[in-house]
Image (cartoon, rainbow, N blue to C red; front, top):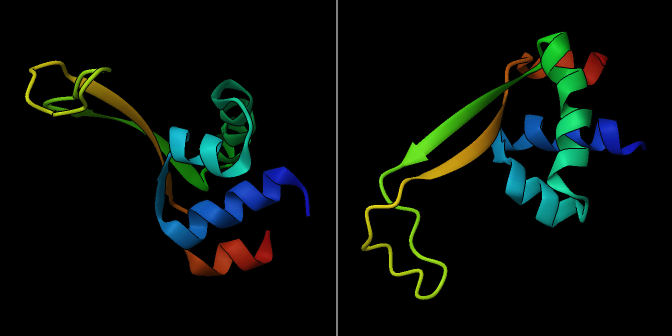
Length: 87
């Protein structure tokens, strides 16, 4: 199965996945995956959404006590259960 289909199926199974989680799981650079995911975004099967959390933690301690906002790029399944099997 191609990586493009594997990404689509993984997001369908999980419901929503961050770009960083996809990069870690599939061992590809986020920019490369983002390009592939854009295919499914254009087809309307997944939606890209930026989430901002109140604190991203710092690079040293990861304590979460600072006020630095963190951006997380999420990909959310929009295709429904039946579309996933028919694609």
